[in-house]
Length: 386
Image 1: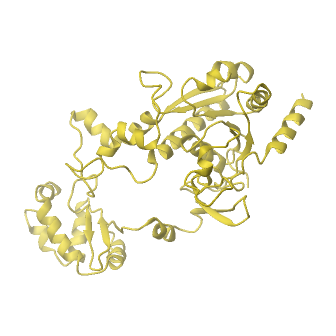
Image 2: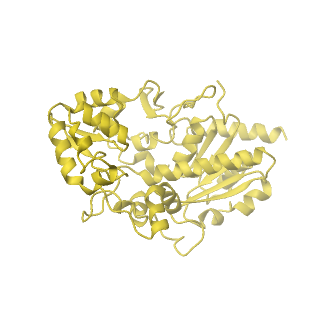
Image 3: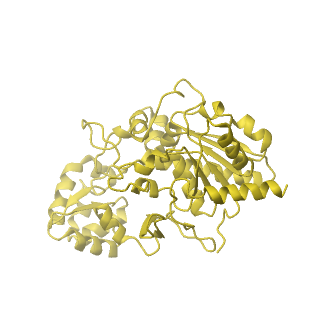
């Protein structure tokens, strides 16, 4: 089945996670991704790899399925020529060097667009290509700190809390992929190439709109709500069930509260002035939370999850990631063979299905320089066909 981006070629100079995740998303949509790596390889090849000396660490596998790898020294004239030849035949150039590095290597947007005017050139950096902080180094946890993200989790008075996975890297990759798709669509409709400047900080602030916009409109930052949902209601919070497992409720509408009261045999809450409205529930947060907590202790979490879900009450048992994978529907994980030994591995999909053109991986993650001969043969053939 032909995927939406079949025929699109990406010259991917990016490394670690934010840039590679962007090209990974586009690759799952059918783009051909040529991964141009340094001779030592992408740093993520051995990131936390432990006993995996093949350069296929889990962190690397997570964002590199189906790509083609060629190792080049971009300070070497001959290798730089190979890189130029790849760029000349690409639709997209993606890079996440520190600002100014790609220019010093001879591949600025001005230079590249002079020989490939239709190129979509995407630069990913911590704080953007201009501005007073452009030269500050940044990785995921740094931008979690500088963006204010660490001060959104936890409760008031708690120390800063990092989101437990590299969320800035992945959300920045999504922002870059969206921008590239937009530029490709613009070009398809008669436009020219485009230059895209993606900032990890800007992308983080954009994804934090539900927290940032209240401040921008009122001048007051949102309070830290811990495990209570965005609504600030005690009925959208975390509770401990009879088996010690925790259950998160998302009861934010009057009809949902009525269903919860009915299921718990506590219809008296509906006539209690302390709980009759959402405003009253917020004012009496602690009292209602205690009452719900007492009821939730009467059954195990999995039982409550099933009963409440069947009753239309939003809830979910707190799971570890291994349990969450088991909950996912068939096809949510993409199975592929490792290029190291052929053993099957799995990665998450894009989070959606589409007919036709369902996203999928075209192959396993590459070993370093695995596709050199294939790429060089393609370049030779392309040169002969001119």
